[in-house]
Length: 185
Image (cartoon, rainbow, N blue to C red; front, side):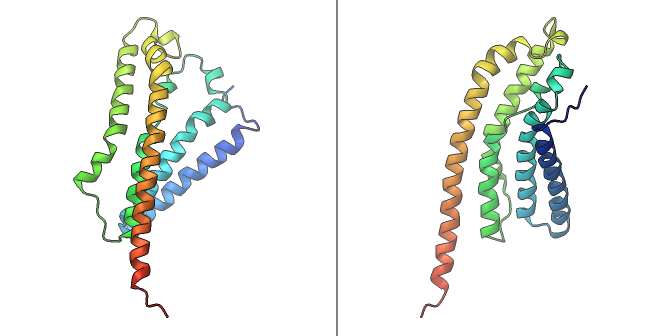
């Protein structure tokens, strides 16, 4: 019977609940302060917490209890959005006057395209005969499990590396600039 608590699921569940609590607390802080860095931190925490969902429900016996579950369609790999969030967060904490512009949303086009791709797969599979009897539909298994997940993971990792370097450069550039303003003996 779901949920099945064990040595693997309990720590994941604790971290998952803590992630949700931190998201709520930081969001309340954002509502009061209106600092964009607080909102970006909420989004970073939310994406990271969301990623733990797959492991948490898996170790708690979701797939055993609900063999025809469609949860796999909604457990998305959002690593394509993680790098831009970190970059925009670093930008917002190194420059307090930072505001998100329409141009900043362009960073999230890859993750939006991935979500649309997964939605198309779901809409195709849900209209196939026998879909309600299986966990994953034909297109999900054929395309996403064989190619899509690998490609999304690879692109997500490349994206994170690129945005990590951009964030470090941004941080060091600001830090070096501030260091030069300090009078030296």
